[in-house]
Length: 299
Image 1 (cartoon, one colour):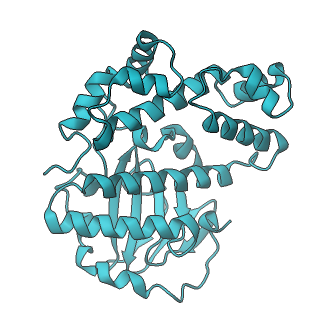
Image 2 (image 1 turned 45 degrees about the vertical axis):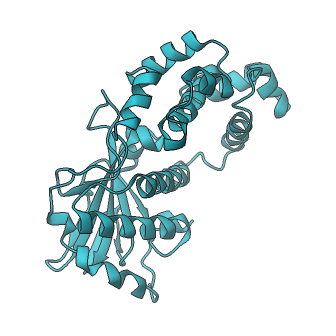
Image 3 (image 1 turned 90 degrees about the horizontal axis):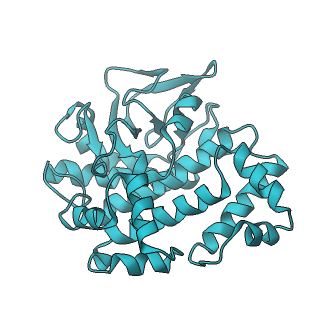
């Protein structure tokens, strides 16, 4: 699984990173997000500013990372992902240049603690999802450096989504239980939930029936993962509603209509659940997005 392989390997085709050398001092520029970081997206209103992940993009120069007793040389384009702006075990020479990005966990749909427990993640910048993430981050760094502002909303959202997919994949690869039958079944159950979020009749019974298991075993699988079926479904629906409410094309959409579209029968229940999850009401979140809270704004 290439993104987490920590074995030295040749990187013969990395010429494509040369065009970002003009942002090679971005790690020294603290004007965007503090700690020399580029803020990809602003944290939500009332959110914890420390609840974020840092993505370090290697531009050029000699660097290596030591993890689990093994040292791995970094190539231009490689990514390090962790909970601090300076990854543990990172060694670099004086001529090494890196760009650091900060993304609130709120926008990624991953838990800060899950990444912290791994000690950090690594993705090769010329393979798989890591390659796509690396390319988008280089583009974002170039745009931010050129305009001395936060990146445009569409690019920032794209970067956030790709990083979310990458981090989720890396976490699954880090999990020693990833290949167990129970974990694979849980993945299929979550996929079924995702495909049927808009169905107001989605229930533990229908979810269990989709995989031919008992409702009791369904609850056990989710409890072993630290949640419940009901909590998982509700959170996924809330996340989907939140993302829809923040889109420019949806900012004039009736909140109740969005809630109903994604399986919430009661508007008042949706509003209470939304505030409990994000600290603001759906209308406040929609207004925050419309004011530019997650759009392109000058620092």
